[in-house]
Image 1 (cartoon, rainbow, N blue to C red):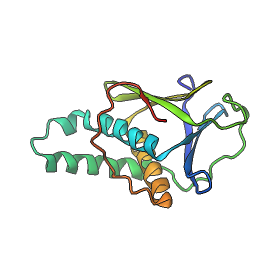
Image 2 (spheres, helix red, strand yellow):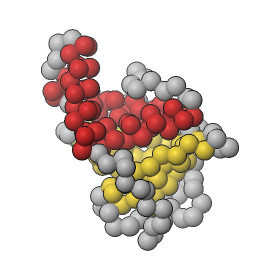
Image 3 (cartoon, rainbow, N blue to C red):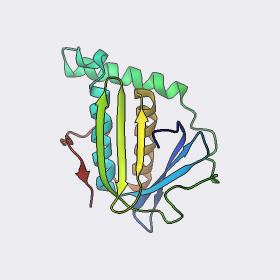
Image 4 (cartoon, one colour):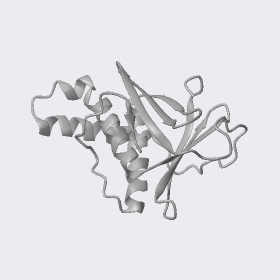
Length: 170
């Protein structure tokens, strides 16, 4: 999805599946959908944390408390600009991944300056490639935490597991 800007993101917990449905609408009317497991969300949180920790304003801080304070401040600023009230557009002009929603199988990421390049792929077929700044990172983190809370998965806001290379989540 790198050629399309992110318009909306949504995460919905499904208790029957014990998974989260991740949907992304592009500005060009495309909708990308994947099922995410608890383990996948934990790994995704770690990648989002690494992106936030790479912020120069955070990394120059001398103490863990100061780093956390800067991250909290920036997260609050980003949340003020986010729109969580707008209804998610259910209908899409196109669903490039097809009508069946695949299970996420592999995650990979790359940091380039201020930008996080995130790939979420099924075992077979097309995945999602997201390019995000730290404001979008903060919004995605909020969506993950809200879905995990509904699932009672008790995900920590930031995990400390290493994720330096592509990760298979099954």
